[in-house]
Amino acid sequence: MGGHALVLAAALVPEAFAELILVDPVIMPRALYTGRPREPHYARKRRSQWTSAQEMFERFKDRPPFRDWDVAVLRDYCDYGLVPAESGDGYVLACSPDIEASIYEASTLNDANLYDQLDKIEARVTVIRAPRFMPSEGPMDMTASLTTPDLATHFRDGRDIEVPYSHFIPMEAPGMVADYVKGSSVSSRA
Image (cartoon, rainbow, N blue to C red; front, top):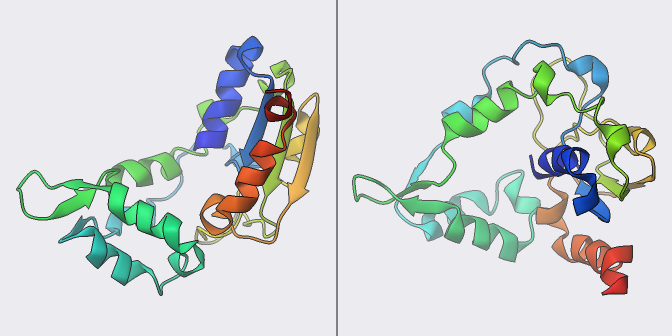
């Protein structure tokens, strides 16, 4: 959701951005914005309560997609992605499954379609994306990319970089993402 939100912010206030690095942003092919919500997303069924961050870590470390994440990133997700349960009994996900699912379900609505905004962005845009694109039909695969493969061509100054990771690029290769940020033209001038 971060890349999508950054693109909208850069379209609304273009002078605030010198450069954007979008890591597998969920900006889908134009035809997928149907104006109708997606089917109920399976995230609604996600386990949300844990006795501890360690229990969550142990449960996830050997399961897809988490087993491919950098261990430190998974540890941070477990340590900081939980908040104390209101009942005082254990912890719950900071982003509830219902909220997460509602974001996915609303991703095809008309107001999620940013194509009319893309040409307003004056900043250089680098799109880093996963190679395996998710088809529009069938169940949602959280590791596949929803980024339209030609996204970079829709920006005034866009470039496309395909990397050998899943949609969870920052979680799987945080050092690589940091290197792109460090190598950006903005950070090079700082």
